[in-house]
Image (tube, rainbow, N blue to C red; front, side, top):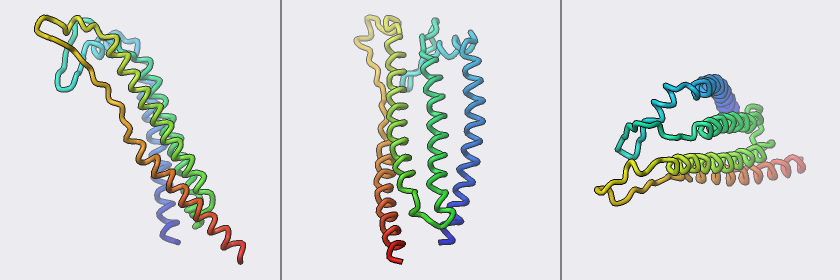
Length: 188
């Protein structure tokens, strides 16, 4: 049990440091990005470069990229990360005291739902930003007599489902452990 306490304390310190470092650096980067969003050099440089797989195109006219939507997604990712780390620290709190089955199941279930819902929203948000970007392209630039068709592939990453479902299942295991702990406490 002492080993669990030490590990939980170390993980809590690491999570606290990672949380504050990421929040400070993320907020500074977010602020710099928001301030530079209207800078003509930034928008023309970033907007004039189109990367499609292994091919890079530098266009004469800036591409109408949905920077505002990307800024909202970046802010949402920062908030989701902060919430996730705080919930993780709540899971560690009873473990630091040597009581792993004291409220951890509820926090694990919350962490699982935050992981699933937030990553689904972020993945769909990125999908719609990419879709809006591709719809805004002037495809006449790419179409000529030599090009028969032009297609784009938008990737929707669902890799977050595995960890989210695993956390949900783990919360049920912890819930069962809490029930066993409660029954053992009642018999004493």
